Every structure is written in structure tokens, then in C-alpha cells.
Amino acid sequence: MHHNASCPVPLTGTIRQLRPSDLPRFREHLLRLDAASRRDRFNGSLNDKFIAAYADRCFADGATVIGYVDGEKVLGAAELHERPELAEPTGEIAFSVECELQNRRIGGQLFARLIANARGLGYTRLLVTTHPQNEAMKALARRFNARLTFEAGETVGVIELDRSPFAEHGAVDLHRPFGVSPVRYGQAAL
Image 1 (cartoon, rainbow, N blue to C red):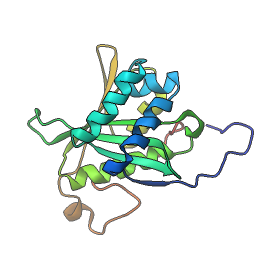
Image 2 (tube, rainbow, N blue to C red):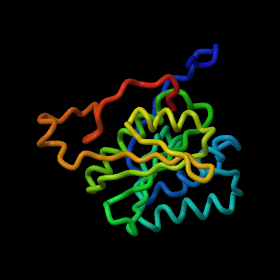
Image 3 (tube, rainbow, N blue to C red):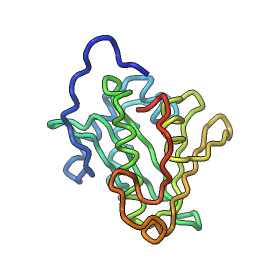
Image 4 (cartoon, one colour):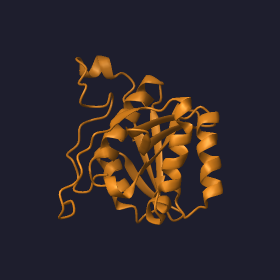
């Protein structure tokens, strides 16, 4: 997939875990999402009040949030929410990248960082849910070997994480998330 004809602005931000003090920046990021990005992130168009309360809940509930941060702004985020009701250690993951930065591989970098964090927290399974038209998210999930199924109008991806990456893989490859087999990059990447 090609960028628009004009030369894209260089990416100067960093990917890091968001601190509690980053909550206002995370909330502002979610509120800046355009209608299509909101639909992709929240599986529907949701109002500002819901989104602001959602951001607050993420931090209050102890979710892991990784952000693409440029200056004082969070412009992309990956979230990891525990699903404690499931028997196997399972996390649910979600992503959002502001429209002017989509198709710049930020989503893939956020995804890789989030999977490494999930391994560090002992998760063995990750779930991702999106609507069937979200091709970028589906392509990203496939890059990380997610099994995708369709249920009740939603696409559900399951990523099984290797339980013992050090024993199986030997030396740690810092360019690949622990416990995820390398896959060829797809055409569409966030």
C-alpha cells in the first residue's frame, strides 16, 4: 500500500508504556479519532462521553497501554486488558492510530511491543475483536499468526503465545516478540 503522493511527515515519536500521568493524553487521543477510526477501534461510533469514561476505566482497571507519543501527544495506542474470568491466562488487545499516521507501520510496532509485554505478564492467549470490514486490523492480526473467526458480525482473532520462548528459541531476538512465530508482512499494515 502506498502513502499519499505528498512526502509523509517523518515519524519522530517514541513507543513506550503510558504512565498514569499520561491518562489525559490517552483520553485526548481517543477523542481525536475520526469517525472511521472510532468505528474500527470501538466496533461502532460512540460518543465523546463514553470514550472519555472508557479511557479513565483503562487506567483505573490496570490495563497495559502502550502509546506512540510525539511531543505532548499520544497519536496511537495499543491496549492489553486482562480477561480474568477465562481459565487460561488471557488478555484482550485493542489498537488505535490517528488517521494521518495510519499505514506507517505504527500499528505493527505497537502490536509487537504489546505482545512482548503480554509475555512478560504471563499471558498465553490474546484475543482481538473487530468488525469484519476492518481490513488493516485483520491484516495486522494475521501477521502475528492470529486465527480469525467470524461470530455474530464480528471478527475474533486468537493469538496463542508460546509458553516457553527461551527454551525453544535460544537467544532472544529483540526484533521479534517473544513466543510469536515470524510471519511475512502483509500488504496492509497500520
